[in-house]
View 1: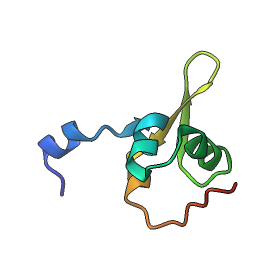
View 2: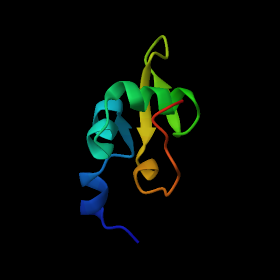
View 3: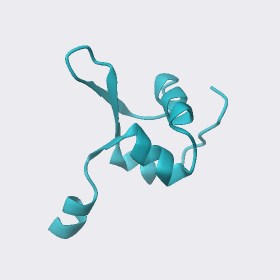
View 4: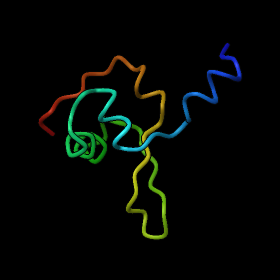
Length: 68
C-alpha cells in the first residue's frame, strides 16, 4: 500500500520529458513508444495533441525498443 507522501511525489500521469529522463532516452523515442502502443497514454488538450504517460509504465517490465 502506498503512502500519501509517495502519491504526492509521483503524479499519476507524466509528461513525455519526465519519462524520457527516467529511461535516459530522447523525447522523440518516448513519443515513438507511445504512438506504437508500447506505453499506456492519455491525450489531453483541446486537440488531443499533448500526451501523458501513466506512471505505472515506469515500473513495468515490458521490453521497450528504440525502433518502433
